[in-house]
Amino acid sequence: MSAASVIKAPVIQARELEVFYSTSQILFGVDLDVLEGQTVALLGRNGAGKSTTMKAIAGLAPPRRGSVRLNGLELTGRRPDVAARAGLGYVPEDRQIFPDHTVEDNLLIARKKGPGGRMDWPLDRLFETFPLLHPLRKRIARRLSGGEQQLVAIARALAGNPIALLLDEPSEGLAPIIVQRIAETLHKLRAEGLTILIAEQNMHFCLGIASHALVIDKGQIVYRDTIQGLKANEDVRRRYLAM
Amino acid sequence: MRALSFSRALALAAIVLGLLFALLSTTANHALMDFVIRLASLAIFATSLNLLAGYGGMVSFGHGMFYGFGAYFFALTMQRAGVSIPVAIVASILGSALLAAIVGVICVRLKEIYFSFVTLAFQMLIHATILAAMPLTGGDQGLRGGVPRPPFLGLNLSNQKQLCMFSAFLLIVCLFAMHHVVSSPFGATLRMTRDNADRAAYLGIAVDRVRLKAFIIAAVFASIGGLLQALFVSGAYPDFAYWTVSGEGIFVIMLGGTTTFLGPLLGSVLMLLLNDFVSRFTEYHGLALGSVILVVALGLRKGVGDFVVDWLSARSEADASERTKTTEAAS
Image 1 (cartoon, rainbow over the protein chains, first blue to last red):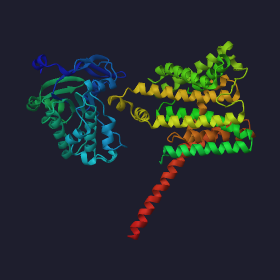
Image 2 (image 1 turned 45 degrees about the horizontal axis):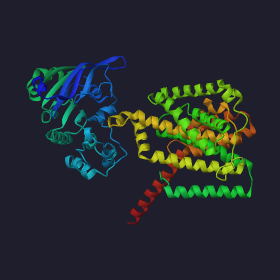
Image 3 (image 1 turned 30 degrees about the vertical axis):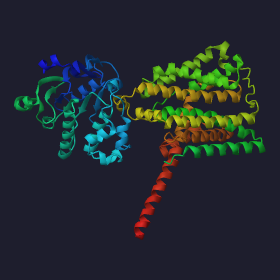
Image 4 (image 1 turned 180 degrees about the vertical axis):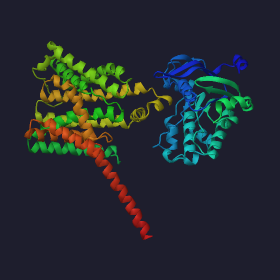
């Protein structure tokens, strides 16, 4: 990864992130890079700091120290809406769809031009990429299954035409069959060349999607490798990921 | 909830105005005319507070500062600048928008109770300033010497009947305008920031800017309520800017309900009726009003307007399921 970063500038770059929730420190200097077109998995147990890292990058948990850059643009200390307009798409852990609105309205609400006025994801392309949602587009979002709601949350993030996507535990609490569908969708997005950072507990979910893996524990990145390297490294997996 | 279509609401408003005009042409009932003017003032104020608190989730304890400011600004402009009433109204709107922009920039960043208390602090600051600025405002004596009401466009607001019609008209215009605000995309965005500010933010909405705009819009309408009061009493008093005005606004929207647009209007009617009725019998009308709000808050657990709307929709749903049952039974 370090060799590659000389050639390509990272789209998402975090340096020495330290985040506190009031007086308790959650992140102790997180460094990470996601290069253009890369899909990186941020793996770790519950409470390791995955969600906080995602929130810190999205501007929802402002770091006390450290910096966040998106495509070289300094985002540290900026509001989440600035990060969003700069091209960061965020999919929260609890999905936060608009429950009283239709699927289509959920996507339309989030529609905005990406950086440089790009409109990569018009509605019809979203439905093309998320064929499961197409027949549900007039359905009230509350009535969807958890997996379908997760797809809505991902599609909603894309509707804002981001250059990078942050996915916080997209497989959490979902049935294996729908987890497979979400993995397929993310695989498609990866093939589109989108830059993606996924926070996950479930390494197997990320195997087919991510190229690289970061393992976070107690608020620090403790391991960096390709996802295949992590798969082969039983010691690291047992120490930091075993449940 | 069934929303009134725009054309129907317009027709209804025209009918109400027509009825009021007919009523006033046959009898010169001063109590009724007073009631309509006070209602217009209170209802514009309360609806504007609901725009902020109900639709924006910003429960201001200091909204009355704009009511008082509007009254003073308008009365002083009329007294000192010698302009016509519409010009003074526009000036008051601009003045309170400016004040709201300054106060709002500080307040809208704050959440929940902090927002409430800082708005309250600003209200007391405005109130204290009015008391202190003796030469300008007359201090605790209030602004005396009367508010000149030169005729404009054939309207003479010194005539109580015409002031009454003007107030009713202004109330309706303000209600339409505020309804337009809450049903516009801006209103939807405002509710979105109320429901989940983080979600709105990561979808790209500058939350504080939306909140500030709502704060300014609500303040402008509150000031219109205040200037109507100044026109009515032909003066302005420090009480108009006291925190109890804000409290009364909260009381009214709790009484009428915050989930329906017209809840505060209903609350204003109830409030004024209660006030007039109770104070006829006892000077402890606060005790009676307090009891009523307790019954509404603890008994209904929502405003009267919310209660009526919920009851109507529950009944129509029951009707619908009844009908499906009978058709099922028939088939």
